[in-house]
Image (tube, rainbow, N blue to C red):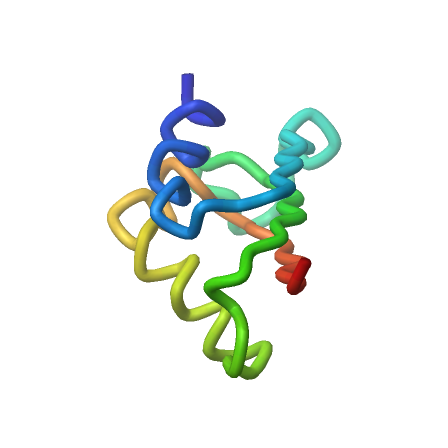
Length: 82
């Protein structure tokens, strides 16, 4: 399952909180959607300490880069410190 794969890829961040919602059903037929899913990610990790929001997002995108855009079409990220 794609959600499990995403969570596995983000495990290196040792999250204290990780909530991943699949919102793909809300976006069926969406113009420009190549078939990938739409996800909402909330993640809390001490690995974000000293990193800007952009750097936090880059860490996440780097871990998932081969899944975008074919398996993940859109990803909304909220990346916080504990």
